[in-house]
Image 1 (cartoon, rainbow, N blue to C red):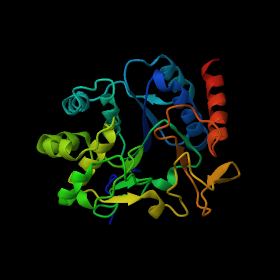
Image 2: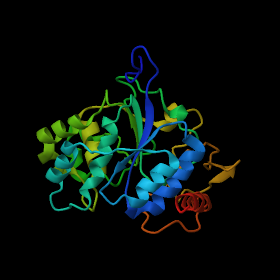
Image 3: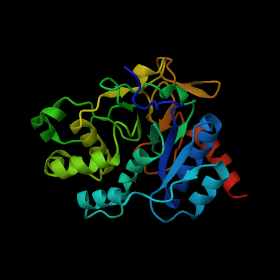
Image 4: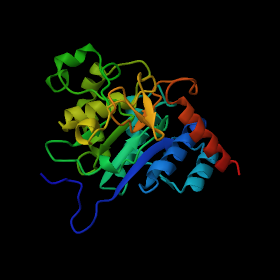
Length: 284
């Protein structure tokens, strides 16, 4: 079945998107350096988390990143409706703006990440009814509570980390999130896991309730590892690029949930190298 993201009469527009502001500059800069070294041929869009963007804009200029100058008000309204008591965190839903960019296929990725390999092999795998939402790794703990087992759509659904996903706005767009929550907000609040989780339950719930077919990147990209966690064991490096304990290729490392900057684990020296190079460029 054809890739639904392929336009008629032209090459598909493909790109990547991140959300950032100055408060996470210590993560943003190494991410940008790693993108420049490995994926500069793939357009990168930076969605503002808020208006604190002095360093962020300087970094975007230094690296040739496209700043997204406005976020759809319906995304911020949805976040406010879902999380009225958490104004400082609900902007995490601004990652949904990635699904409104002028792209046929988009990778959204968090910035507490560094990239090690060309992401080009990740594109071109979307198939209607087969692989409509591509993820890097499952997340069994941080999506729903036990009440999900009462809902047929959710009971056996693949739960995923929304720090990386690839899809097309022909398959999933911000309006679908709005419509899903208008219809099912009561159910969402019943099943979502609490504990300062915001975007991840929303993205999982919308994908599941709209019956998108989820696929693992490692099942579609030859020799790709599903490993992305910063605490991964048995990691080795070949020509500066990491392999998992089975010798499969790790595409990126995600410091998900880490409260401090990297220390002495497998990927941390690479993160420091990217960080030092990036700050040197931005401080010129």
